[in-house]
Amino acid sequence: MSKAEFCTCGDLNCPNHPNNHDQGCTPCILKNIREKEVPTCLFNVADPERKREGYHFEDFARVVLEK
Image 1: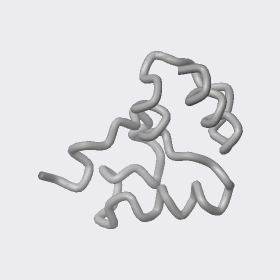
Image 2: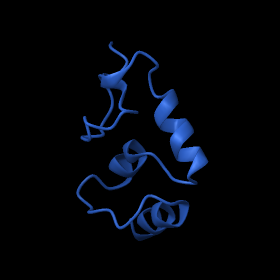
Image 3: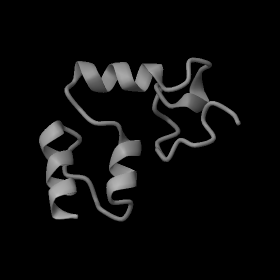
Image 4: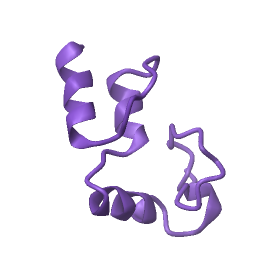
């Protein structure tokens, strides 16, 4: 399995997307930790159809509680 094969993020232009380097998910996770956000892949598991208002912890908690 390639490092990006399971990635559900559709933003292939993002420099942190696993398709754009050989470091797997590490750059994405580090960026999200730094910005106190949750990665897109987790949002996509919780509710793949939902339009995002934001990616902060509170936004993710709202999605989970509503599901």
